[in-house]
Image (tube, rainbow, N blue to C red):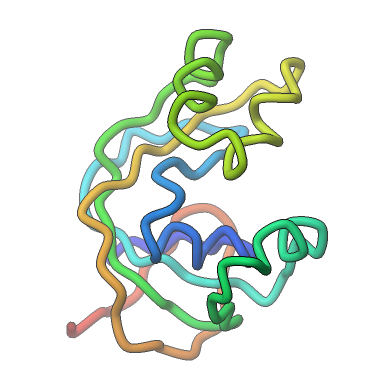
Length: 130
Protein backbone atom coordinates (compact mmCIF):
# COMPACT_ATOMS: atom_id res chain seq x y z
CA UNK A 1 0.00 0.00 0.00
CA UNK A 2 1.20 3.55 -0.67
CA UNK A 3 2.38 5.60 2.32
CA UNK A 4 2.84 9.35 2.76
CA UNK A 5 5.18 10.63 5.48
CA UNK A 6 3.99 13.85 7.12
CA UNK A 7 5.51 15.96 9.91
CA UNK A 8 3.72 16.35 13.20
CA UNK A 9 1.30 17.88 14.12
CA UNK A 10 -0.05 17.63 10.56
CA UNK A 11 -0.19 13.82 10.48
CA UNK A 12 -2.27 13.69 13.65
CA UNK A 13 -4.51 16.53 12.47
CA UNK A 14 -5.28 14.40 9.40
CA UNK A 15 -5.84 11.26 11.49
CA UNK A 16 -8.21 13.14 13.81
CA UNK A 17 -10.23 14.73 10.99
CA UNK A 18 -9.08 18.35 11.39
CA UNK A 19 -7.14 18.45 8.11
CA UNK A 20 -8.49 17.05 4.86
CA UNK A 21 -5.79 18.28 2.47
CA UNK A 22 -2.07 17.52 2.54
CA UNK A 23 0.13 19.90 0.58
CA UNK A 24 3.09 19.17 -1.66
CA UNK A 25 5.05 21.04 -4.34
CA UNK A 26 4.51 18.06 -6.65
CA UNK A 27 1.31 16.62 -8.02
CA UNK A 28 0.25 13.01 -8.07
CA UNK A 29 -1.96 11.03 -10.39
CA UNK A 30 -2.35 8.36 -7.71
CA UNK A 31 -5.87 7.85 -6.38
CA UNK A 32 -6.69 5.27 -3.78
CA UNK A 33 -5.85 4.06 -0.30
CA UNK A 34 -2.76 5.28 1.50
CA UNK A 35 -1.29 5.04 4.96
CA UNK A 36 -0.45 8.20 6.89
CA UNK A 37 3.03 8.03 8.41
CA UNK A 38 3.92 10.48 11.19
CA UNK A 39 7.52 11.30 10.43
CA UNK A 40 10.19 12.06 12.98
CA UNK A 41 10.22 15.70 11.90
CA UNK A 42 8.20 18.15 13.97
CA UNK A 43 6.89 21.58 13.00
CA UNK A 44 7.47 23.29 16.37
CA UNK A 45 5.48 26.46 15.57
CA UNK A 46 2.50 24.38 14.49
CA UNK A 47 2.77 22.15 17.56
CA UNK A 48 2.43 25.25 19.71
CA UNK A 49 -0.54 26.46 17.65
CA UNK A 50 -2.47 23.20 18.16
CA UNK A 51 -1.51 22.29 21.75
CA UNK A 52 -5.00 23.38 22.89
CA UNK A 53 -6.42 20.29 21.15
CA UNK A 54 -4.69 18.02 23.70
CA UNK A 55 -3.89 15.37 21.09
CA UNK A 56 -1.09 12.83 21.09
CA UNK A 57 1.54 13.36 18.39
CA UNK A 58 3.51 10.13 17.93
CA UNK A 59 6.49 10.16 15.58
CA UNK A 60 8.18 7.54 13.44
CA UNK A 61 5.05 5.47 12.87
CA UNK A 62 2.07 4.87 10.62
CA UNK A 63 -1.03 6.17 12.41
CA UNK A 64 -3.93 6.20 9.94
CA UNK A 65 -5.36 4.97 6.68
CA UNK A 66 -7.04 7.28 4.13
CA UNK A 67 -7.82 7.65 0.45
CA UNK A 68 -6.39 10.23 -1.92
CA UNK A 69 -9.41 11.22 -4.00
CA UNK A 70 -8.07 14.30 -5.79
CA UNK A 71 -4.99 16.46 -6.35
CA UNK A 72 -5.88 20.14 -6.63
CA UNK A 73 -3.70 23.06 -7.69
CA UNK A 74 -3.51 25.57 -4.84
CA UNK A 75 -4.58 28.85 -6.44
CA UNK A 76 -6.54 31.85 -5.13
CA UNK A 77 -9.85 30.00 -5.47
CA UNK A 78 -8.52 27.00 -3.53
CA UNK A 79 -7.20 29.35 -0.82
CA UNK A 80 -10.73 30.78 -0.42
CA UNK A 81 -12.11 27.25 -0.02
CA UNK A 82 -9.45 26.40 2.58
CA UNK A 83 -10.15 29.62 4.49
CA UNK A 84 -13.84 28.74 4.66
CA UNK A 85 -13.10 25.17 5.81
CA UNK A 86 -10.61 25.82 8.62
CA UNK A 87 -8.54 29.03 8.68
CA UNK A 88 -6.47 27.85 11.66
CA UNK A 89 -5.37 24.57 10.10
CA UNK A 90 -4.76 26.05 6.65
CA UNK A 91 -3.35 29.46 7.71
CA UNK A 92 0.12 28.82 6.23
CA UNK A 93 -1.29 27.99 2.80
CA UNK A 94 -3.82 30.86 2.91
CA UNK A 95 -1.15 33.44 3.86
CA UNK A 96 1.62 32.37 1.48
CA UNK A 97 0.02 33.36 -1.82
CA UNK A 98 3.38 33.02 -3.62
CA UNK A 99 3.58 29.30 -2.73
CA UNK A 100 2.88 27.03 -5.70
CA UNK A 101 1.78 23.52 -5.00
CA UNK A 102 -0.97 20.96 -4.75
CA UNK A 103 -3.45 19.78 -2.17
CA UNK A 104 -4.02 16.04 -1.92
CA UNK A 105 -7.68 15.57 -0.95
CA UNK A 106 -7.91 12.92 1.79
CA UNK A 107 -11.15 11.10 2.57
CA UNK A 108 -12.25 8.02 4.53
CA UNK A 109 -9.62 8.67 7.19
CA UNK A 110 -9.42 6.05 9.93
CA UNK A 111 -6.99 5.71 12.82
CA UNK A 112 -5.12 2.42 12.91
CA UNK A 113 -2.83 0.73 15.43
CA UNK A 114 0.57 2.40 15.26
CA UNK A 115 3.22 0.70 13.14
CA UNK A 116 6.74 1.92 13.95
CA UNK A 117 8.82 2.29 10.79
CA UNK A 118 11.13 4.86 9.23
CA UNK A 119 9.54 7.16 6.69
CA UNK A 120 10.63 8.01 3.15
CA UNK A 121 10.20 10.83 0.68
CA UNK A 122 7.32 10.99 -1.83
CA UNK A 123 4.75 8.17 -1.91
CA UNK A 124 6.36 4.92 -0.82
CA UNK A 125 5.23 1.32 -0.48
CA UNK A 126 4.58 -0.74 2.64
CA UNK A 127 3.18 -4.28 2.82
CA UNK A 128 0.18 -3.51 5.06
CA UNK A 129 -1.78 -6.49 6.37
CA UNK A 130 -4.49 -4.52 8.21
